[in-house]
Length: 111
Image 1 (cartoon, rainbow, N blue to C red):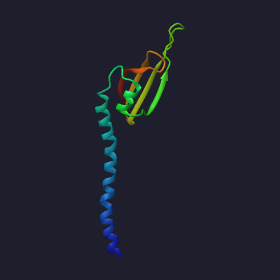
Image 2 (image 1 turned 90 degrees about the horizontal axis):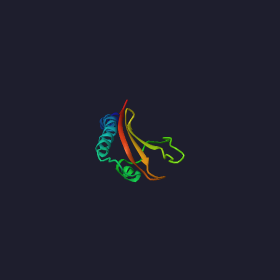
Image 3 (image 1 turned 120 degrees about the vertical axis):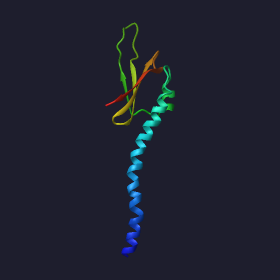
Image 4 (image 1 turned 60 degrees about the vertical axis):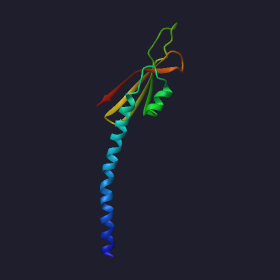
């Protein structure tokens, strides 16, 4: 019985030791892929084009930029992608007309 348990542990322990290393590489691989994809961001891209390139954002925000009564502002739409807690990409959209958002700027943030 002890021989069977020892054999089982001999097979199981190396597999368990490998699992954290593989899990740690997944966020790095996702960040590396995101950085490669972010190179393709272009001014004027639509919401759909950005989502196809980068996927769904982690967070979104709509900020009012003010404006005059004769020229209402559509504000700025912010999409935040967070692949790691200390490294995020913020994509800012502007609108020429309601619901016609386009990429105005983007920036990587590190904390």
